[in-house]
Length: 393
Image (cartoon, rainbow, N blue to C red; front, side, top):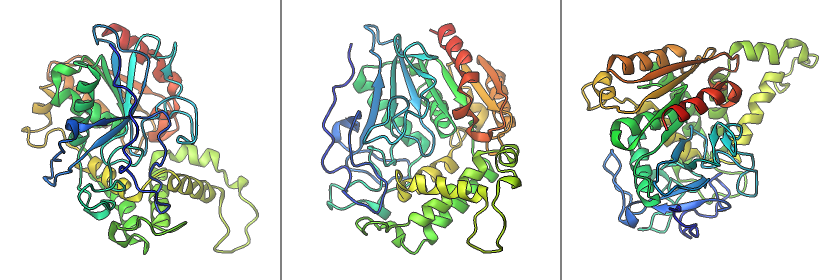
């Protein structure tokens, strides 16, 4: 069996705007029309008349369609989980060290799929996309979406690709939320799952940090209530998005790493000026500006909110009842220094699966890199993931 053929990017998917970091090129991406173009109704109820998912694949689907692995990305990730940088992808794949020929997720043997989520800005339908009813970007009119909405669109993609059951669904952070929802919503379509630095439900502190980031974007005078597309070069809520990223970057790394990396001896001699930046401030500014170049503020708002809304127990009589639906064995990974999604959240998820009579293995990753450890410490993840995939083949 083969994957869905490479399709030209729909011409109306994204406007050519410089006020947003939404994708304008299609290099390497494939596109799936959810529901064969019949539209999609998110949990919130406001319908989208046309939804396209951008995705990338590696390897080949076998004749039994039994070797497919779904990779789910985190908040500002995209479909480029592995591969070289090019005109559409400024960086190499975000899990480059884990996915590829002979690696933990071995593309010589597995058919690997990574979609850009609904509401994103890297090819999939999101706020920067053109509303087919108006011919204008959705902007402020794009609905709130949930993790479950993302999974429903991915299920449509799986069907189109001929994947009846995923060999494994793998994700970290927001990607782990998607993987867990997959196992709950479609228990017979998931043979196994890997959940890294994730949780069964968002905590109050996670929501609090999210609120600060969203508030920075919405307070930017160039935000215009979310209708800023076409504003021109350097316009749009770029400063707000950069500040949101800077706030998030602090939560992604640990105090230990910051203290060691930005020792005060690395700072220039103080001149007692407000505009003189400490080394750590320059680091934050760099990451803020880097995100602005490749991301859209409206997408950030919606995906960030989707993470806040994440609660597998919602309308399912609680988390325990939701986990009881799972059939798939799980590998649950924690990073020791993660303060945003602390290890006790993964321990509770692991124990909740065990209490429900499920097969779950907990992996502790030793790292000072904080929440980003699931992206950085690939050497510690590689062998356990490879062994887990082999065990549950």
